[in-house]
Length: 300
Image (cartoon, rainbow, N blue to C red; front, side):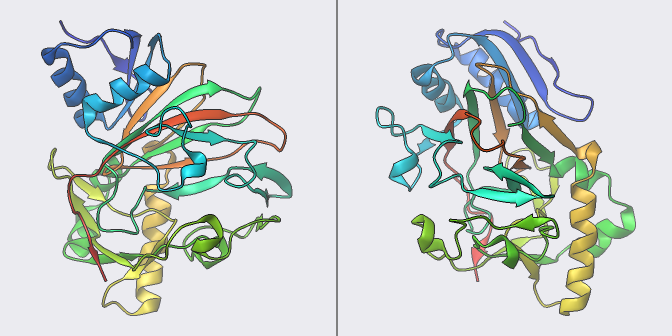
């Protein structure tokens, strides 16, 4: 049986509809699903019987699951499940952007990029949605690399990029905070939200995907520090140019959620973001995380 799919958007991704999450796929279907994920990097799956148990079972088709280190955002019944709840002010503080208050806004990032072993991927499922806002953004760094000029590709080959763990947005030099005002409860140091302090990590700026072998422009604004061994002014100028490139609209997709939607993305290839919701709006997303089984970077 061939799994029917279509383009998710003009830019990227694939859409699978009428999927029954209660049915266990056979070996051929499991392989086809994995290959679709590897090819597109982003899958939106819509269908019947989307619930916590079936989300967990479906997620395991793509690898071993990882529990979130913060117990207060795990589901009490299902520890593999992470609850992204806009009404939980501990994990979704209010901040101000362009003069408006927002909850849960996150810039472009890749999970655990500040370590040498990023997550393999993750699945989000829409449980409760607000009347407006609450989208999730996805950016394809493989397509961004493909679109670079030959001269830029040659310039980037062999360069190493440094990422560092940070929770204060003002200390993220490549994240645009010109229209940002931290709200009450905004964290200043990792321990404020129960995280340890991680050593910096070093990656190839042009990363080869371990499975597809596609080249990836391994740049995202959050946690980005600099280019190893390069003069700071030259590094800052180059990274500013690359951040502008990788966030161009033709490489990015903003998903407007529908109830029950599940989105699976390849965290080795894709960055993601969250524009947030207005204070008082209820948004609940269940997340499962696929453990990274490869070391792609190294501690500095």
